[in-house]
Length: 151
Image (cartoon, rainbow, N blue to C red; front, side, top):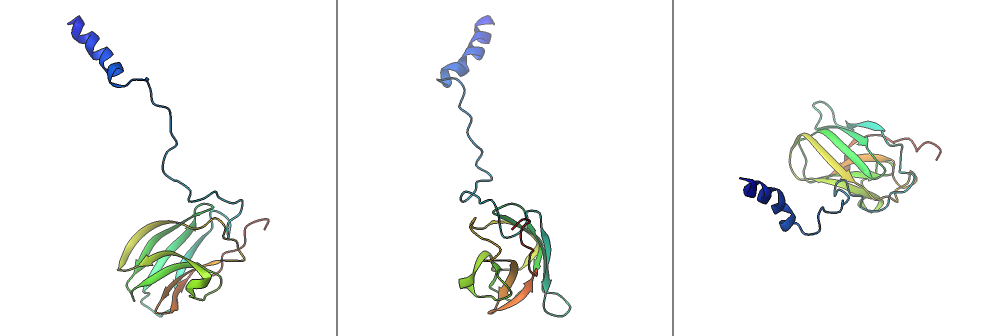
């Protein structure tokens, strides 16, 4: 019995040479690049996406600026037209050359939760609004986010 107990206690040291593994940083969340001191608005700002079209609304959702490079899109409901893009732009234009596409919608969304990362270099003079674009026009918008405090 003592031999079995000694074998059970010493066996892990034969399997793992070198003892314990050095601690490593966790892989999530991993920044895409080094975050800047400011982003396009204050962290923690929230806005509802408002549908331009009359009742019943085709799109609803909440936008949360969760970090210097992170935006959370939650409670998203979308029924078309497809394809559509959720973009971070300046103003209300849906020009893909003047904005950043956060997410491409290819099918119906029902109470979706989406975590997206955007480039760290975005400032308030570059982008200030989250817009849903379909068929070359804006379907829904948050309105302009305020500039960050002390900007």
